[in-house]
Image (tube, helix red, strand yellow):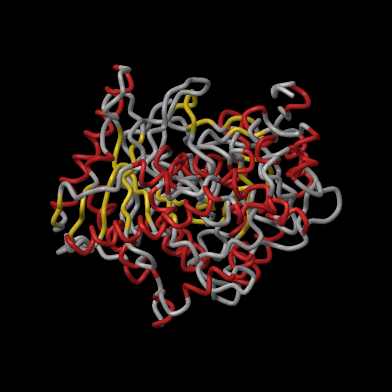
Length: 566
């Protein structure tokens, strides 16, 4: 399936219809309107839905059932959802009752969210995609999930992911391989691939990702979405299954910059359960009574200076495969066109500026294998019931995907000796050197941001050895915020391309301003073809949802497939 050619992104206010005489979302003719469901979504924003809530044109139950119908219709070809929340309809009814007072319960009132299934939920198991955690229900919500509920959100479903967030391929023993909705023979990116596929195909409104080395931005680029990796410390990691806490963070994934800003406003802030967030105090718009949504300006690129990391564009110098070279050049063409749009929107493009070499970047990136055993064991200690006691128990059980056989090696790392590992300590020290290098580039060139392709290649085909060409490892080592925004599609393969803007630490407000202006001037987001209106005769109830959950994915664990050498 290839991308749909006629749908562009909807702006912040969503005032324009998707076509002459068409409603903002839903049926496309008067006759269809008589039989169409109340909510038939094509790229709606939070603002669009809230206006219809306020005017009584929609109920939260309408919206939740509309997305359930789409999940029921399209999940089988995407393998993107692990579980639907059995309480989603009950929550919808509570919010509809609250709306009778005439006020929204919060900035995410009635917005169905997709959570990456490494975000703790007290009412739904949190598996990190692993059969070994199938019955692991945490004692409470992750801090960010509590904030979402307080803001009025509906937790609609938990998304598939790369098991334990290990890779860009989003393969798990619990959910299988996530497919890219723009071409289901390709990967959707990872590790937050399930969130990426569901939001791209309009199976949910927004979702969470987590990002250690690109796991928000890679699937966002692969699925034509907006994805933010915030400054490490802006958003709490409490209650998130860890990969490597030095570089772990959560971030929003959405179809528009405006929705991502609204979502960030909800998630951001100090949390005593995550001391790293103390660094954010006084350094966000909230300290001045503002919000990130206050920085969504159409002219936000005017007078900005944007540096280009030209070394991060195109095929690598040592690449010999002609198909890979051609693919990287196609991505570069889209990127260069994006630079023209940035310049046309009023920015000064400084091309090139000196980029840190990848040897330098890699030397400052903490290897997740150094910290995983320590951090996952600490997480598992806080679980109750049938959850494994530690990583050793998981490794011995074999209840994980053959795609992550490296889990056995990570279990062998001495978690008590990490702080005595000279190579690990040298990596930590290099992070300051990298920051100084990049800060100097910003100052010397008077830059507001730098930009580069999020991926130099289009998403690899499943079961191939094609490269990802990720540029996503830079900002985690820097602890800088970076945001991927849709830039268009390659000419031949019609696959999404994302550009990534990066600013300095705690400059998310500037980042949203720049990204929003680019998005509104480029209108590059297009939904994938083949995910149109659905007809469903399902009478949704808690029992029906639970039955759907039970009928889902076949487990593909090492224990069943014998995929790891002993």
